[in-house]
Amino acid sequence: MRHICTLELLQERRYLPDSKKPHQPPTLDLLKSETPRGRCIFTKCMWNIDILFAITWFIDSYRLVSFFLGRPTSLSWEDMEIQAPDDPFLLCLVRLTKIMSRSAKSIYLNTHDSFLSVRHAAAAIRRDLAEFESLMQHNLGVSVDSDPFSQEKGVCQTILTSLYFHTLLLTYRPFIILRAKLSKLLAESCNGNGKRFQGERSRMPAWLNEACDIAITAARDAIHHISRASVINPPVQELRYHGFFIGSSVFVLICDVLQDPSIIRVHQPWIHMGIQCLHLMREGEPIASTLNAIDLALKKLAQRQVYPDMRSGNSPEFSVGMSSKTGDNGT
Image (tube, rainbow, N blue to C red; front, top):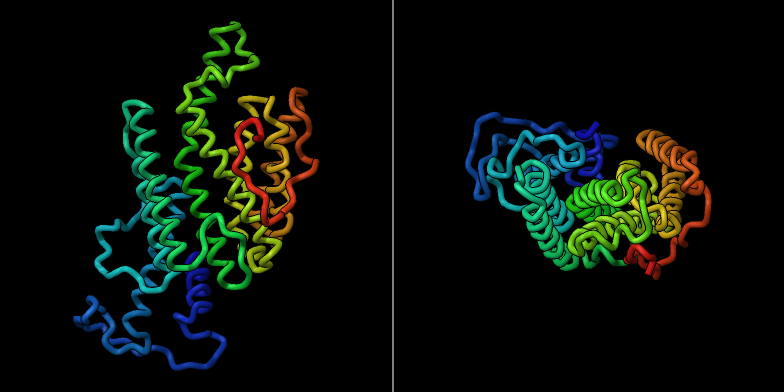
């Protein structure tokens, strides 16, 4: 399925001939030959070397699937001996995929003696993402904060923006887990029964709250952009894997609510916006399973009688000027 998606994307960007149109199959000669831009195993092929390089980079970009699933990749960057792609979108995608790989290695694969080293690693990834944003602005004329565009440019923009915020989210998500554990320990030490108390979050280290705010803001930004893009640019609704980004973002907000029920009014509109966006997308998987998982989580929260039912309510408008960069208190 991944290769089919790759071929469809390559056809859309005119790297491959349209299979619906009659054409001669490429003639291949398995003798290796040297070219000015590298080694190619095909000396007689209707595809030129640039197209083969583009195919290689597109397929290699699927290492981001390994990043999402937390699995190691089968091909390292050291094995790639061809030059960077010329296509502006593909160049941005390759750069972002490299940042994802560094994030997975430095945050999740390396052994850390303390969260201080994790904090430094996350800060380095964040700087890399800031440089990527400049590259995206230079190559495509848009940034992750730009209003969604329509047609092909808008689709490319949404793909890169969603991956950007998802990478930032996964880089800083461990800090949310750390704060949850510290909150539980703090509650147990203060009242002995583990129940939350007012002002608990204010007793957390400032750097930890700041790191958690980065993850929460990234979750809101992902929901915000994909939701607006789905309305402005209908082809985005066909890219159902965006449901994965929406689901991951919604669950981060739900996790934050579990830590501090007092902020439920802040997160509820964004959770509802994510649910609305999922309903706009083409039916099927993974949309259906994501909606079911979110509904089950919210139902469990409502059964605790501490949380209101967040499965309904008003969501922020999909307006162009709305910002998702708010603090825990909604300001």
